[in-house]
Image 1 (cartoon, rainbow, N blue to C red):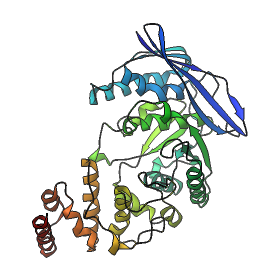
Image 2 (tube, one colour; image 1 turned 30 degrees about the horizontal axis):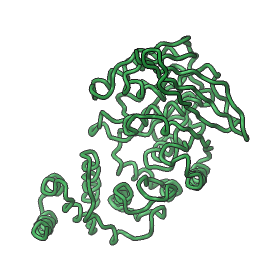
Image 3 (tube, rainbow, N blue to C red; image 1 turned 90 degrees about the vertical axis):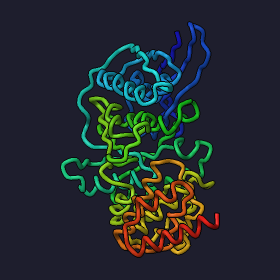
Length: 398
């Protein structure tokens, strides 16, 4: 039998921080084949779960066990509600990707019946559009009865910024602190080696990893707000964070709220425009060499800049100063259907707002689905005919 054994270690205090650790042992037919340590680091001012509480460790390593088809043995306690939820969570991923993720048994040393969640919410915040939108609308009570009081936010070092790049994290963290200070919300830095030891595709595992990290704050905030990636009508179901499954990562002591699928990305940016500090401190880039800032030229940077332009706004100062006339999309590569749909939303908003800048017509010569993109996006009329003439001339040149 193949096993993944999780054994919690005692808290370690060092240089004003607390480190929670878990030994991760893999066995094949009673023979140990691998031994690792998963750890999370927090400021010592944070009240953390008991040493034996293994909710976070189970959440973090669940998809690795499913990927490797290993039964999980937890030598500690886990919430009964979380265990129940993870049965359904596994079923969803097995249905979506049956050749990748298996349904595995989970053996637990003890099962907890938690009390209800403490008041208030926590949100991961690294300065991106999704988190900025969620923090802004909840802090301003723009989500009607669903609005949450955000007690604090956390910035995780070891996710999009590697642990080895301490200077980039410090710089990005300082900018995020400045952003949240504007609405009187504190930001807590967190470190974890999760990505260094996990074997699972990050596009699939980031939801589990995020909730696993933030669940350490359940004595401080009982609700975890997870900013959405896709809108309800364009869901990519085999994605690490989804309104279908995110709530299944919670327990009675730590609820998980998926937030923002009511909005397209370009609509989120429209809301963020009301928060000047939030807009001018956005950090969306993950492909640039410098991880604490936006390169301005990768697909995501270009898409976000066009989100602002499509709303009739100038490009904020968090991007290299170029201006709308210098946004060049001629060599843009759309490698996923979901991204193509986001670009279509950009175009729809630009047309609705009567934006006729060069980037609008350039989108029609993207080398994936060129003719189809024209047919879907552009309405009848002189502007459409003008764009089609431009596309045809580019087809001839190619």
